[in-house]
Length: 459
Picture 1: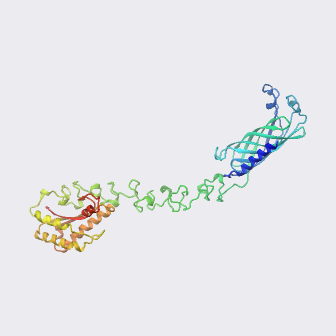
Picture 2: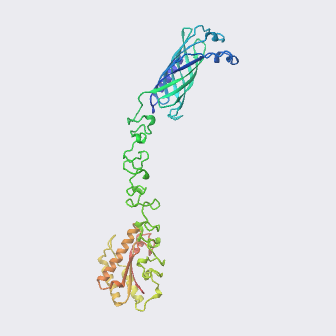
Picture 3: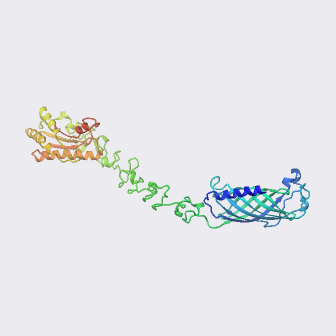
C-alpha cells in the first residue's frame, strides 16, 4: 500500500510540474449513479447472465468534485454509495463473505485527458481520459484501501454542461476486487485562465501569450489595421489586408515597399505601375505613355518600323535610317544640299569633343571651340539640314537617360540657333541608351557611348 501511495504522490507532483496550458473553467462538479460489480472478476462468464449483479438503485449515488491542473491533468475527489444485494453476492464464489448491504467508496483520482491540445483538440465535445488513484472502500462496515484504474470520457453538450461516463477496476487490499462504473451529469465553472490578461480565455485565445482583442481571437493588432501581427508583414504600419497589412497608398493591392509606383495604381505584373496605353511598357519608362509603341522606340509609335519614333521621324510612313531622321536616303531633294564627305567627317571629328556637366545638359566650355567649327561648316552650306541626336550609356534608369539625351541634343541645337543657324534646318532628338557604339562593358566604352551625333540629311 505504501508503494502505491508513493507512486500516486509522484504522479501528482509531476502533474503540477507540467507547464499550464490554456485551461478554461477549471472547476468541475458532478452527480450521478454508480454501479459496483463483483461478478465480472469473480464469477465464471457463463453464469454471469443468470445471476447478474448490478448494484445501485438510488439517485444520486455518486458525487464528484475536480480541479483541472492544466489541459492534461485533472485531480478529482469521488464519493459513491450503493446498496448491495447480499443474496446475489453470496452466490458468487468470493474469497470473503459479504453480509452487509452498505457499500461506500471515497477517494481521489488523477486523470490524464486526451483532449489536451496535443492528442485531441482541447475544444472537442468528446473528451476521453485515463485515470488511477487511491480510495477507501467500506464493505461489511470495514474500510479497505483500494486502487482504482480505469478509463472514462466526458461528452460536452455546451460550454458548461456535459455527461460523464467512467469505469474502473478496483484492486482492494485484503478483500475481493470489483468493477466500478458511474454515469452522471457534470458542470464546469470558475474564472477562465487568461495568461495574457486580455480578457479572452486561453481556450479561445489564438495568441494566449500575447495580449490582443476579441475581434482577432485574442491576437494583437499593433497598428489597428485589422490584420493580426502574426499575419501582418508590416505590423507597425497601417495597411489593408489585400496588401498583407502593409501601406498601399494607391490601393492597387501591392504594398508600397514593393510598388515601383506607390502613388499610381497598377498591376502586379507591372510592379504596381500603370501602363496607360497598354503597350507593355510601364508609364515611367514609356516615352509616349498615351500612344502604344514597341520597346525598341521606348513605347512610342513607329508607324514605318524604322526605329525612329513618329514624333521625331521626318518621314513617319517611310522607313529610313536614324542618321537621316527616318527618311529614305534615296529621296534626296534637289533643293537640299548634302555636304561633301570631308565636311561631314570634319563634323564627326569635332562632335567627339562635345561634353556636358555630369547628369546635366549644360555644355562645358571645352566644347565651344568644336561647336563653333561645326557652325562654320553649316554656314558654308546654307541649304543643308542636320539632325542632332543625343545618346547615353546604360548607367542609371532608362527613362532618366532618355530625358537626359533629349535635353543634351536640344542644348546643342539651341547653341547652333543662337549662333546663326536657322532652327528649321535642325532636328534634335534623344535616344537614351539606344544604338551604343561599343558594348557598355567598361568605363572607356561608356564614355564613347555618351555622345551627340550631328549628321547632314537629304530631306
